[in-house]
Image (tube, rainbow, N blue to C red):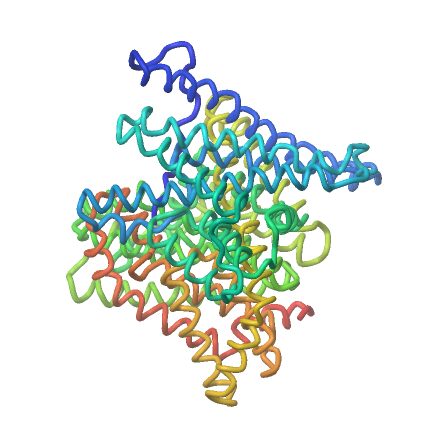
Length: 633
């Protein structure tokens, strides 16, 4: 899976790095970086300020800002679409590069060019679809006092910027500078032939089949997952006329801007501020004092620190990157093999998407209309089960391979001091979960409070960074949040066509005909989800699979909250397995360890996690017991 963790934004527009055409391209891209990147970051800041002000007004003065929710949703549209060009530039789009990367040079160039053609064609379709919807939408948004079309007004502009970035990227990188312009030219030609003249038509073909083929082909070519889904929806419309381009754009915007989903950029930003402020290091120090003395001590610390980090981040990808940077080098220096260190880091990084505040469970709540509080509470004990399974597995491996301990057993005083230092961070997780569970705050409000809390601690209490580092952290968080939002938006028209073509009903009937035994059906569903998880990003897989499987599960009498946890845990295992295995790729790439060696070392850890999945699947009390104890679900 391809992704870059740190955007290269802010290149000076006044000092080109090279002369001639390349220097001019770099100057233009640098200027756009400053303008577009600044607009995205300021939009995120405005979003934070508006929701936080609403929380203060609501609880401090018993007076809410009536237009806050609408303004926040509109600002998230700005963040999502303006960040797309920046993601082109910094290659932050999630994509599967495994197949393309193994091709010989000439074939790889062809595949990458075709991928760029798909991106260009999809961007052109979004441009004209956005322009059409601007002309079609009427009326006023009375909360904001603005015409409703303004919500969509930046989409065509963002698409033009995306094409500019795509055209100039090769010049900037001094690699195949012809590829972008050629791809845009071919994409524009295809748009004219197919959508303007109608010279090529696939009308009458099966839209579901066409969409599946288009999606798989574009993914194999290495196109970003979100663009693959949007492209597949556009192609399916050519076959069946199910969703015109303007409707695709409207579905994307509506799908990505539910108020609940605004919690996603907030928790991503909170995690980024915690990392920048050194607060995650306090969690790791506490983990060292707790389990560093055990057999396989550094590996045990790796697992436990992931569980602690889960309470503030909710992102497995950021935990995998952070753990690789901080813990893998230490493990290697203390005698652990690099592949094993990466495998432990990747396997333990599955936990933050299970223990609240989990971004995956937020997405699942939006896809299934389940309570975020119930899902987050249900994720606590399963997360602990996964941690214990990994710790047992690490202990056995350490005994077999002779891995020692990290340090001497810490005394009670040292542990209490480490706990006291980590308490401000650990307390945040308790406040978030408790506040949501007992209806004090919404997930979105909890997310913005986490942002402000992390900012105050990092910048004013611990003085870990200044204004410059704060801006860079917010810029990175904005693009990362936008990529998640784009993926959620892209899944909306994709899912609409799936439902229209009755694919959920077909899948439900197929599984139901194999067995009526709930235990057998759950096993089959587990295997199906793990298969999808091997090829899809977890966000996309949740948005596609949840509407397909939930009716079947409800018919069997399975609790939907329990099943939601089962979905996320199963799909997280896909991040550890080939061919995609994004968590394994992140750890291998950052540490420069061959990923096939990481996969090989992953086998026993996967077995341990699969055992945990079986416990979570067949013992509902693991997911639901905590809710029963405190008087909830």
